Image 1 (tube, rainbow, N blue to C red):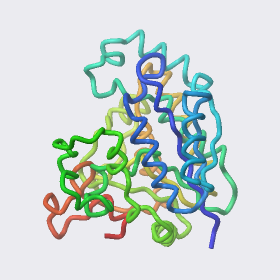
Image 2 (cartoon, rainbow, N blue to C red):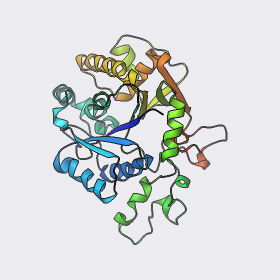
Image 3 (cartoon, rainbow, N blue to C red):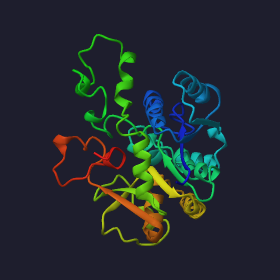
Image 4 (tube, helix red, strand yellow):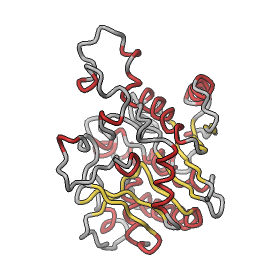
Length: 308
């Protein structure tokens, strides 16, 4: 069996300028990452120095005996896109620096670094995957995959509880039935020797003007496949190609004074290199995978990991 390695990052303290990261994600990322470590394969997590990430991860690594978690410091301010992204966002504040806009808390710098970090961890002939640190969360995974899902109050976030939030918040990010050694087996068996993409049919929050307005190229989206950027990878021998082409596309985006997420870039690469991809299809995604939201013919996102 090939070596398996997962790569992720933890930048939970970088909201607003100059990075525009997601706000208030510390608990989600930490408790989710603890759950991801249940897969027992090596997880390399990039983070910022000191109290910007490293100290917090070191604490949980020791507290929860996360022997398969490797912590690497990468100062976010050193990312190769910082100056250009900052200039674009501040010079076009109405579009890119508006706290009321959905895009505001989405940091291209953090998202685009997924490609850089995967290349950093490249080894030939292994299965190498990106996985978002916060992937294991309520909303993505239904209550019945949590050991706490049957507790009274779980489904309404313990609104009537008299206990401090800190005593139960971890329960919303703990899904050992979705992330374990069997998960790795399912993923690697599906991968074969390809590059895996998990795709939603017919729905996306991507902005697909990227293709026509930046690279002047139309791509075939008739099959309605939109990649979930929280998980992708596989045969590591394709990593140099994927990363090199992502960087070309990122440079084109910045030349046009535009900003897009990594999801759009992945959609383009997937469409361009269908021969190396193996796609897993789902119909539901965030807050859609619970039984009451699914018909029998619908495939929920979480099944890729849970098998259920």
